[in-house]
Length: 369
Ligand code: G6P
Image (cartoon, rainbow, N blue to C red):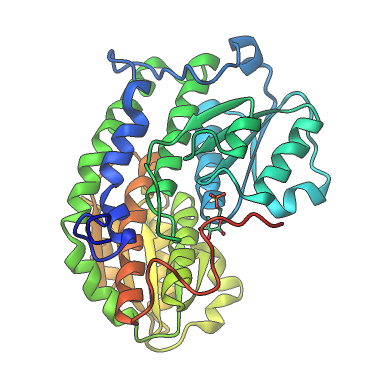
C-alpha cells in the first residue's frame, strides 16, 4: 500500500503533489506549439454550432460544482456567453429553460454520479448539446455526452477531490479559450497571453507545495477550533466555497464560505474573539474592497489568515498571517489559490487524527439520487 502511495502518508497528499503533472497532462497536446491557440479535437461542434450557442448551463455535484462556478466566470469572461451553474440534484426540478441553443456542460470526476447523469439525460431530452468534463474515459457520463473533454489527472483515490478539481479548472480554461478563438470574442494577443500564463501554472504549484510547512502550522492552529469562515470576492469566493467544503469533508470542522461583501448583511453576527477567518484576496480589482471586509472581522477579534498574490504585500498589514501565491492573471488564480486550502484541510484532518482518505459518511462516487 505504501508503494501505491509512492512514499506519501496518504493518497490525498500524493494527489495534491500530483497536480503539476495533472495540469501538464491536461493541457498537453491541446496547446498548439505556436502558443497562439488551443486545439480541442474532441469537441465535435462546428464553428456554426458554436456561434449558435445562446447560453451555457454547467451542472455538477460537490467539488465538481465548485469547479463549475469558476467555469462560469471563465466562459463568461472569455467567450462572452451567459452561463448558469447548477447543482445537479436541483437542476431538473427547477424547470430549467433548455433549448437546442443551450450548451450543457456536465462536470464529473467519476462520470458515474447519479444526479449528474440524470441532469445530462434531461438536457439531451430537451435537445441541448451536452459536453462532459470527466476524469474517467468510458464512464457513463463520457459515453452519453456528445463531446467529452477528458481531464488527465490520473486515478483519484482519496474521497476528498484535489487534482481532479484543479484539472477541471484547466479544462474550463482550455474550453473558454477555444470558444473565444472560434467566436472571435477576444483578440489574439490576449489569447496568447492566457496560454503563456497557463503553461507556467505547474511550476507555480510546485513553488506553493514547497511551502507546505507554513500551511501546516496554520492548520494546527485551526484544528483546535470548531467554527471558522472563509471569505473572498469574485473568483476568490468560488475558491472559498471549495476550501470550506474540503475542510468540512475531512477535518469535520464546521466552516462557512461567504462572499466577503455579504458578511455585513448577517454573518458578521457570528464573528467573535479568536474565530479564525481565511481571507482570499487575490483579485486585483477587488483587493481594496476585500481589505475593507477583512477589517470588519479583525475589528471584532477574528484571527485572519490571508491569501494574496505575490507583489500585493499590503495585505500583510491587515491580517495576522499571510500566504502568498505566485502572481498570475486574475482569471487563473483559482488554479493556485486552492492549493494552500487543500493542504490546510489535509493537515487539519491529520492534526485531529481523522482518516484523511476515507472520511466518515462520504463515498468517492455516489450512484444514487
Ligand atoms: C461525491 C464525492 C465528492 C464529489 C461528488 C461529485 O459526493 O464525495 O467529493 O465531488 O461526489 O463526484 P463526481 O465524480 O461527479 O465529480
